Length: 138
Image 1 (cartoon, rainbow, N blue to C red):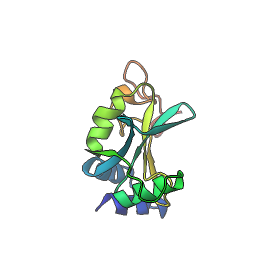
Image 2: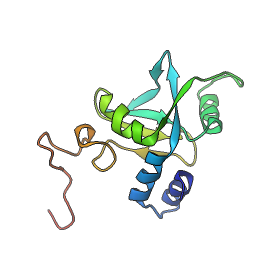
Image 3: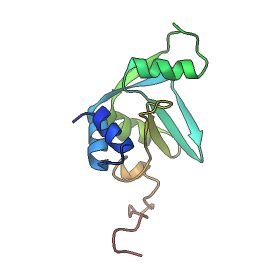
Image 4: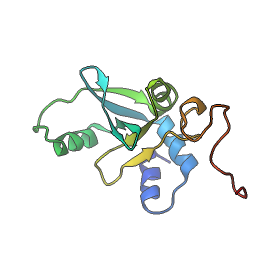
């Protein structure tokens, strides 16, 4: 399938989390930059790195933030795997990915085990054990 298909399935109530993360890892995304810094926002103690599936979606986001039509936004391109495995752990504090922010087909990839490396996951204790109960645990 494709990342677009998996995000649409998520919004249609038929999520396949493993397939969604897998497609994100295989897809190259655009990450806008401001003064050589990756663009992000913070909400409830988590930094969200903006990533977009294509230039049109990035342009719509820019316009929704008050950018003039035709204004060039700088961005870097990276595979989703590199974003999750390299960029997220290098960020200070808990960081996730906001994919196609501001669009009807956006998705969040929170800093959780199974999405980001254990070292960057907020649901894993310092000893590497998940703080999330498994099925059947209370």
